Image 1 (cartoon, rainbow, N blue to C red):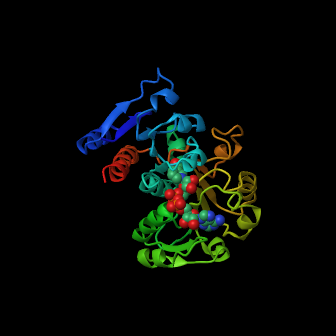
Image 2 (image 1 turned 180 degrees about the horizontal axis):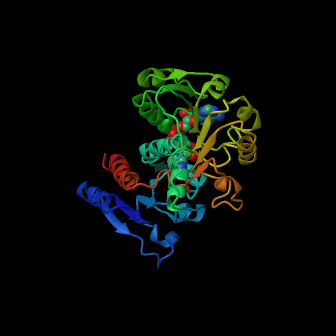
Image 3 (image 1 turned 90 degrees about the vertical axis):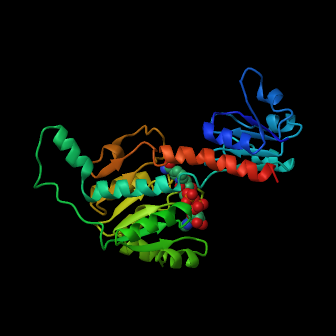
Length: 302
Ligand code: NAD
């Protein structure tokens, strides 16, 4: 029987599901070092707290699977795992819907000036005349990075009657056709969109993908949304663009430094800011557990 070591807590239903599938589950009590505890287990499950270092991988005698219940893989030494033929899996699909919905939370907040309206109401002001907004209907949204999250954003945008322009570095023709998006060049998307949302990973090629040159080409009425990673949108260039009136506003869930050390951008009147919570929903958390269990069962009970 395959034995699973749960190093960081995961949802109880996921543990039950694995037990029902005939897997033996044990929790790491953290009194024994992981280099000791790992012995005799086929699989280890971590979230973000536990680090599966080279030492841990090399101390394991039976390990064939490492599962990171969540998105990033920074806490797993993938090179060491590869050298020993240990498979590494994660659950990047778990938060896609939550992040996509957060994009619309930001878009509506910007379009209808919800943060400003709420702040003025709480200050006991009734600024009905000042707070005119815009509709999303018949506006154009440009989606940069048409992967899991980008596609979920597109589906929701279509349901709101928006035109969708999609840009990616891989072939996305089939995905575009499926959801009714138009594949666009980077420049067309930058120039014609009313809302631009980024869904690319942070890589050397995507750092500063939206910078001074891009803001200069955008409509003055455009809004930029970043729920991907801080750094994809150049913060200094964004602040300048907002101050110069080159764009209308920004919705930011991620920042170059988290938490920010310089709060100027966050405090800008035309910025709606959230503290990297796009994937923080009960459903996304539950899905992490479900997907972790499903993947382990598939790998270890064949
Ligand atoms: P994904 O891998 O499914 O999609 C990313 C897409 O970006 C791919 O289609 C890829 O081809 C494309 N891409 C890569 N480089 C590009 C470039 N230079 N120009 C254009 N497109 C490029 O990833 P996903 O699940 O959709 O997630 C997207 C990003 O969202 C992640 O990388 C992560 O940083 C971020 N994210 C944020 C949160 C949050 O809490 N705010 C949660 C989950 C994910």
